[in-house]
Length: 183
Image 1 (cartoon, rainbow, N blue to C red):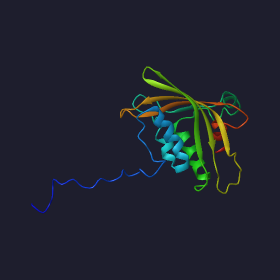
Image 2 (image 1 turned 120 degrees about the vertical axis):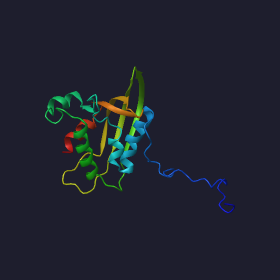
Image 3 (image 1 turned 90 degrees about the vertical axis):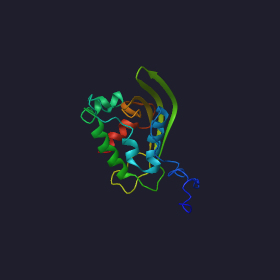
Image 4 (image 1 turned 90 degrees about the horizontal axis):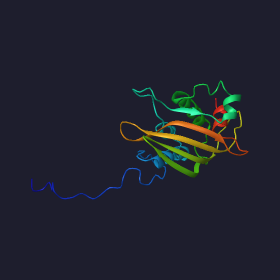
């Protein structure tokens, strides 16, 4: 027992991902949800995107995407019931198209956080820059728009997006356009 040094403190170790600027962070606040979504692209980790979306639970409430109103009309079949499964299919296909070594960047700009009873409403402008690998169909590299996100807490008190309302904001295509292009 004398040689074990049971009560001598060991040298401290750095947290596992301290050197990774795009590491996943448990979304304990609405700001971290946005950070994880943004980190999904340069880290090339589609689960970062999916893990902040609400899956169906015992209440039946799950993620829903509402496209830009103009695209909701012109692409009604695409967006008829866009939920978690459709989002997973879309983001998987998108990440397959991306160049893993290219510059992927999602920037949130002018963000307003509004607490409403048991949820948060976030209205934010976004700018998404993508770089693609070899693709038969060239896709735009720049996307810009405005997202209104509804965030709720799950049973683990982590925030998840239950609704995403998209709005085109200028001459660049928006997130809704990207969804119609990646099929």
